[in-house]
Length: 287
Image (cartoon, rainbow, N blue to C red; front, side, top):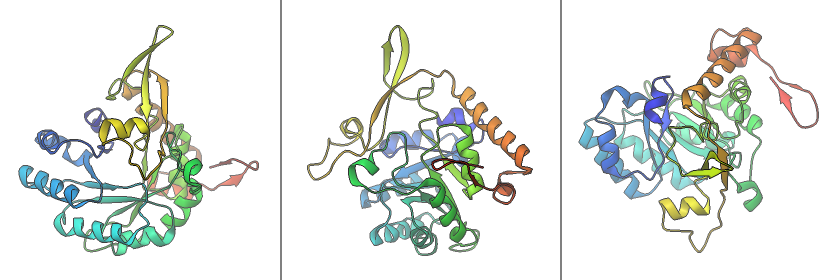
């Protein structure tokens, strides 16, 4: 999937469960390094693995520090520790949902991009299981407002990435109008040929199993099963095969281009200045 998306200059944050040896082999291809990012958790083992990868490939890979809840002092401290070892990398970290934490990660965690939203993914049950969540549009608007312009050093960035909640290309366009610099997409790419997923036949047609990384299935496949002290916050779905990911990418890019044309934006960076939101009913808003 990462190699397929690289052709379109789309960044892929790999999941956290690849072996170090697999990542070292992947990064031997220098042509794709800018578009494939290593993802880690926030344990000392994760940091040691990242340092080992960097040492073996003689390059500091761009890094995603990925946790379900980044609203912790220890997470900010860990991000800063990663920065001290990966000073040349672009670092994205989260997830967080408030202005204060988005700013805290940028200023004191040493990162470049705050990853936003809690409880909004297609396969996420956090809102139902824990009662915790934050409206996507509000989260992007509030956090981007404080993040833009902040930086943690020379050539460092002060950006935000909206993560979760996109069902169609128009949702990406709305995220950009709200102030997102990046939009992380998962379920829209699920079911494509490039996915590493279990194939299932339903009524003679090919389907795939799609699951959240906090689901029971993910915990069984990638971890050591569900921990006794926590609940599962992810779901599983059986979805029809979609074919080549290039077709999905074309729909997304075409939708964003058309959105720019409608609102008069020359590029994505101009979209917040060119678009505005109006309430059309009690539930939905359009850009």
